[in-house]
Amino acid sequence: MSGGLGYALRRLWQGALTMLLIVVFNFFLLRLAPGDIVDVMIGQAGGGSPEAMAAMRQQFGLDQGALVQFLRYIGNLLQFDLGYSFSNSAPVTELILGRLPASALLMVTTLVVAGLAGTLLGTLGAVWRGRLVDRIASAFSMIGFAVPVFWLALMLVVVFAVQLRWLPANGMVNLLSEATGWRRALDIARHMILPVTSLAFYYTAIYARLSRAALLDVAKADYVRTARSKGLGATRIVLRHQLRNALLPLVTMTGLQLGALFSGSVVIESIFAWPGLGRLAFDAVFARDLTLLLGILFFSSLLVVVMNLLTDFLYAFLDPRIELA
Image (cartoon, rainbow, N blue to C red; front, side, top):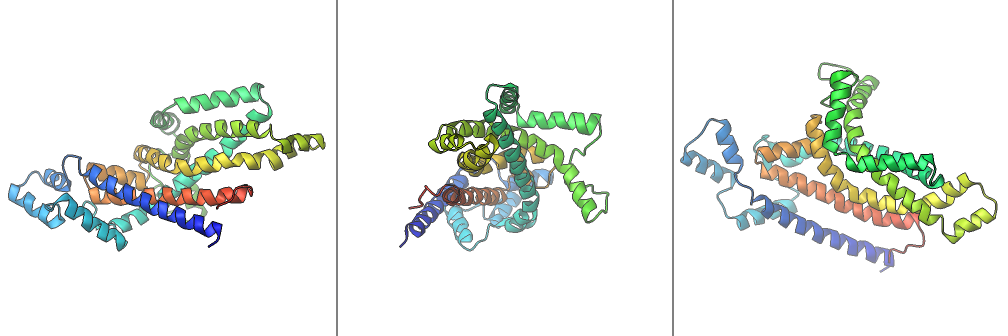
């Protein structure tokens, strides 16, 4: 068995074990929360008798012990069945797949914007270290770390949506518009500006600080000094020699930030009424729909584990000195 294949199998086994621990932790942790979906449904109906509530819990399988419910849940997972959401009257898998494109669009756009803007700021700060550009980039990074995401989102809504009325404050598209093609794409892009800016502001600061530190560290390497001694231009040295090796910590950060980005998108999607997984999870919490919430947590955890695995393999592609074995 080759080193690369052996490494892949070990990482897959570790990923599977991690997912099992996450499933166990999420299942029993959510069971500690008071109330269930029956309490919510009875409350929305204006009340009900204890007999009616007991009958509903029996119908939903909530009258069984936690261990029995867990074993049934694991059995459903092995059959690729995430369960049924009674609050939405639809299978959990169908709900997740229906909201996934909106969340993926928001998160991928945020990562691209934050990655490009942060790397550019970090590169400029490293090249002109100690100068005005570096001080501006450092000040932006400090502000980005300090400003809460939800506060920035609310301020953007107040300024650009309420006061200036330049941008829409909620939703993904204009519900009154019947535009198609490019007009619909532009409509979606206008609705994305505020939520993407709110999320990307913080992550841009992270990428800027990380890329600056990585570039300054790589600048001390022997091959960079050799390139300078050969008379290569500063731009060529930065782009062809320093930046590629400085990308390694940025790749790691991207994989690690997916989970944090999803948790941040819960707040942002709620503020901007963005129809994604974050908003779906928010609604599931208030509806006490634990089956739906477990499905969303399982899917997001699986996404993080897969991205971490892909990050390890991308490391070897960016730096041939790293052996998968």
